[in-house]
Amino acid sequence: QKEVEQNSGPLSVPEGAIASLNCTYSDRGSQSFFWYRQYSGKSPELIMSIYSNGDKEDGRFTAQLNKASQYVSLLIRDSQPSDSATYLCAVILVGANNLFFGTGTRLTVIP
Amino acid sequence: NAGVTQTPKFQVLKTGQSMTLQCAQDMNHNSMYWYRQDPGMGLRLIYYSASEGTTDKGEVPNGYNVSRLNKREFSLRLESAAPSQTSVYFCASSEDRPNYGYTFGSGTRLTVV
Image 1 (cartoon, each protein chain N blue to C red):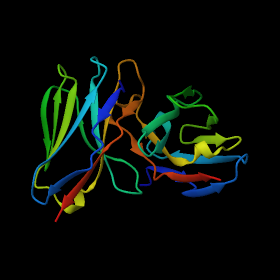
Image 2: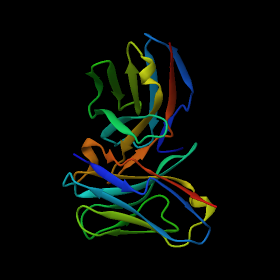
Image 3: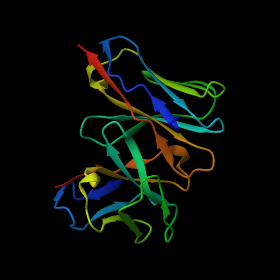
């Protein structure tokens, strides 16, 4: 089992819909979780971080964390074509000094 | 504010050639990282440096060396390039531990022929 797993997609949603991106991780003791957005040919940019169980909202983005299920998700409300990108889940595993990344989920928002 | 600057942006090497990828950050971060990104493999850590003067291997260090020249600069060297090292390379930095995530450079697209 990989440390961080994501469905590679592609995930297609119509404009205005909710996009739901999911990530599971292997290390039950992990404490810090991140979502990055990466446009084609560009570098990853941090969009959300979450450290406690529950939901964290920032504008149209909501990160959800369930440590018991080792599951973190990202919801994008009112999806826009500009949200079309690859979304990377990243986790700091116990005892590590670096982020472990999933392979990313490619999201396409259809106008 | 520049953030993390990587050079060059593109490079083509012949098998066996050597080169150094440069990275500099101006955010006074202690930790710096080199990742490679390949289709279907995600971002994989090559080396990292938790502070000036220290470096540690990551998941895929073979064929690479690094130098933490000072607090700002962290370079990645390919001594004898191989086609398997064709990839996109990203440098990143963070505070002491990456509890607040990384800031990434713009990347270097390297092709080894």
